[in-house]
Amino acid sequence: MREFECTADGVFIRRDAMESFLLAFGAYRSRGERIILRLSGLAALPNSDADSNIPLAAYLGTLRELQDQFGQAFMRKIATFIFDKAAFPPGLDTLEKAMLGLQQAYLMNHVNGEGKIGHYRWRRTGERTGEMFCDNPYPCAFDSGLVAAVGARFEKDCTVVHQEGACRHEGADSCTYDVRW
Image: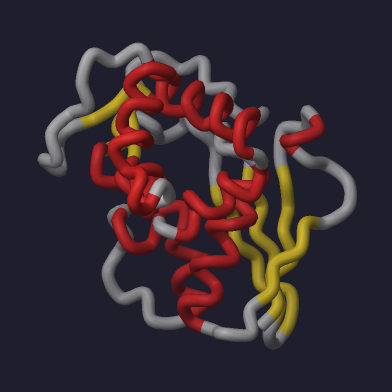
């Protein structure tokens, strides 16, 4: 699945998961709210109820515009707040469990997404190495930031490097990241 492309109807991101986007604006949160309203076409942001949702296509359009305006570093910054605001399955207390739990967390934070919005697939490759395969509509920079932030939460020396070859930012359908800790 290419960056920002989700053609499935009826897929939403939960409001609480989108909160990480607003946290990336820091003291300029109200600016972030205005930007998402302008770029998504929404009249108002849903309230903070956990059951409030935003169409995924509108959210991805907002992310695309922000990446164009502020660059990939901003996408990585947004991703660093995901673990703080989005829903994650219980019991994630090691890097390995967290990486394995990313797919479940991904589906927990989207409505009607199963089978429509791609995947996060973890594979351990060594004693302290693994790889994360991503074929979802989020930008490469976002996913590399997400994997790095989740890894660093459990292992301070965690590093994430994009494998050579396929990259969604260059038009491919997937990216794979090497993770070491």
